[in-house]
Length: 389
Image (cartoon, rainbow, N blue to C red; front, side, top):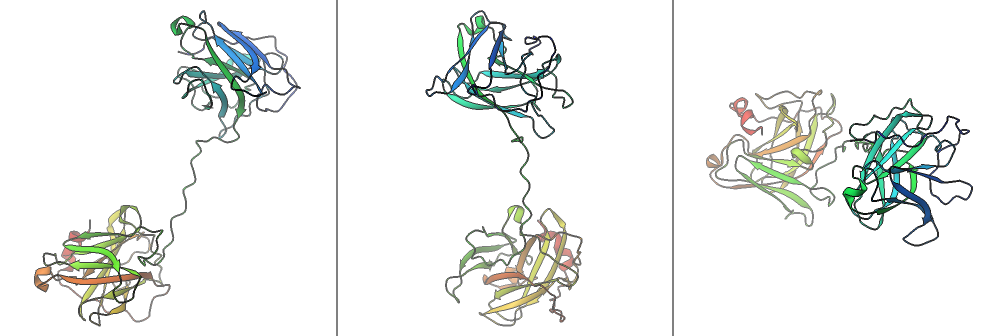
């Protein structure tokens, strides 16, 4: 259903160009004219909620047509100043007082000299017997009516209270108030710019603004705990259980989809360091990076512990990938990281639960010239699919 009824027209004769300003019914220099059609009865009155400001009062009478409404004008030929719609500015707002929630209020704009050029949209009241501001987006025209055409001049406006119901269907005279018809300078629905991705920073487990998530696979059990050797700082504790697979490990993440900020690898910067506490020297620690959105894009490397039951900093050079695994590809996005304690041995082969601590996962700004030795495992190439999730 649409308002095929044309609001009142008069002979052409446009006013001198005046820029749009809100229709407030309060400016003594402006003549506000309300022109009824279809069975409304309107007037400019004091705000029923109190105060000295003026508003438009529109009664949809018992005898009203379903398309009954009122044209609000401030110039000749039922006109208002041209509404400056643009590709990004298609919104008008209006304060509305209605007798119930859920009532459709239709707003129509048209060319005061050509009623065939128009656009209509609606908003629905949400409160009863109180003022609220409704938003009318002319980019979303009412069904069955013409779309907004930016080549047209829109300088006439009409409001239709409870559009679609006759006064007889409503069952009584109903009273509405309208005020502050305003053109919005920008469309509220414009998407908020996406913030730039977070830049890499060391994973310390100590920043209260960051949620550190440890995701186990293959038989590990991990948690964030206090560093028993250093006091108040937090670290990751990973237990490789007796039931663990040889590829058991833990993904360390700070963002959605098991992600971390993108690791900024380059041709000259391919290393990461991590503080490690292990139960013995000679234990291989594998570190894997991958694309959080594509597990087929990954790189793995290893470093070997040199002390027992003490902290040390290990260096992981992804230019030296683990045997049987993919080389570092600088065209890929690496934003997911997993650690594999004592990679290559099952918990059963180790013979007991074993505990490791990890902290301060850091990207090194430049790559050391001496590669970190990698621990080789003959079956590694067959295991990649097992620990890619």
